[in-house]
Image 1 (cartoon, chains in turn brown, yellow):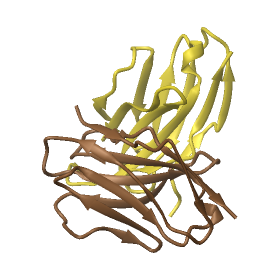
Image 2 (tube, chains in turn green, purple):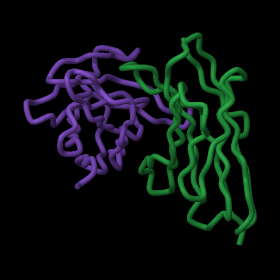
Image 3 (cartoon, chains in turn yellow, cyan):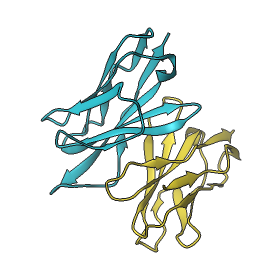
Length: 113
Length: 116
């Protein structure tokens, strides 16, 4: 079964600085999708960014970008110019085809003013 | 376009009771998935419905059931509630066309269930 591992339970970053959240996954498939979701204190799960495994180019969304290393099965999230509103739980997730999303345990990010 | 909506947002029940949660997907989305989130187990998949049919099911006891209506709205039911059912229940919807469901899921705000 596919597994997703987030090895950093908690991280902190100074406002305006850059932080990278780590994620590794285990799969024998070659075609799949990876996601980062943000869950602020409101508990609403918000899609941050997605990456198709067949694409070599790393996805970017404004201040958010990923470093996708398919061979290493690594999918890290970089947040640039961190803002107070970025404070949240971040979940890495994997999905292949119509199978359910598989989530990591999450990383709690604190942003220090 | 309105997002995924879930009702109720908060619920308090006692052991042995049953509960029904509702989810309305984004307009045009035909796939609805349900997840349970607890501090101990994290996010766990319950089931997925597409075109009123259950397509995937997670590893939960039969007390957990669901259904989807012709307008894509979905309900999940938990019977004979246990203390361990206290959790945040999240619903997510995906766009689908031609029988294929897109991979990106959009989540609702969740229903927080407390079982006393």
